[in-house]
Image (cartoon, rainbow, N blue to C red; front, side):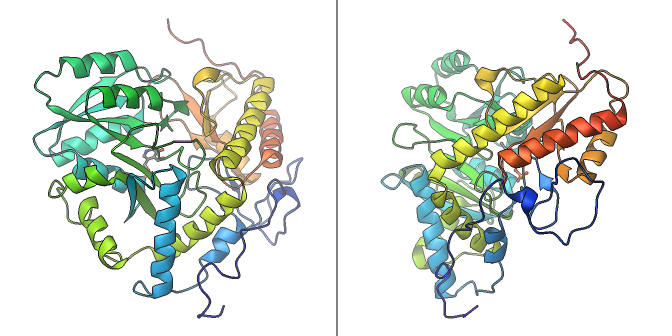
Length: 417
Ligand SMILES: Cc1ncc(COP(=O)(O)O)c(C=O)c1O
């Protein structure tokens, strides 16, 4: 590649159509032959997981460069990424984007440490592992918190939150934190209703939108939040290594001096980047190049709406196929996000999850174990660079695998009353 070429020039969004993986080129290691050919264009298995995910050939190609962190071309890419991410929530007039090195947890920790002032309290809505992780972060940071915990298969209780905030007479609670989609289960929490209650009580809202950003619409003009975090490697379909915070500029200004950590201080990261467009510490250049390309591909797919359409179709295809095979789901349709689906483990003794997992992986499909306290489950994701054809191939592979294992009935054990 011509080193003078501006980062995005000469590179169109990948034109590889979705759902063509089954015809894709190979050169890959041989596997047990499934009924439907099932191989990602890279020769790797399809990742039906919560992330990192299958990326497009264009996203992988975008990383085949070396740009210096002080290089004007890299600085331009970085600026464009920040602008595009802010625009995805229509936050241009109110919010700014602060990217941060690391996986999603790093930016969740940075958000809590930067926005919740020492001596104040964070109310955390919990119905899964990622809500509980925010509490763990608070314990590490020595920030006070209060949990509003509910069952893992039910959305956050908005009325209970309203009551908690009305009873917080001395205003100790400065912020409320919500996980938009609890990836533990695939359950969608009521972000809009929570934001309305939090705004009415004059508190700040912190959102973990790790597994929805880019695929579920969030509009900063109508949903009030002080900070929202996500990462490169989920619904944006880039490679892992960078998170970002979309922060209300006024709230970020007011957060100066709160942070417990030099590297995770989002205010300092923002100030430095505003000064000269550069990162304070070594940026994940290649991941950012992949994100630049992934954002171009998102736009080419019709933005958040287009991506939502594909994921919703993936999810419908998956659910219809698994229902037909007799599997039961944990989450009611009304609360199911088109991101990842939790299935109850069949009670049939022939179903051993590890064996099921290995056989599916050998056929080219990687699924995910469960992460619940309430039931034995496993999960199948519908996000990443895959479409209906791949979901249908995965279902065929699942059916074949059940046959090989001798699983006659996919019904789960009855749940204790
Ligand atoms: C909702 C949510 N929050 C936080 C995280 C943590 O992200 P990471 O594993 O990248 O640190 C995840 C990861 O799946 C997630 O789904």
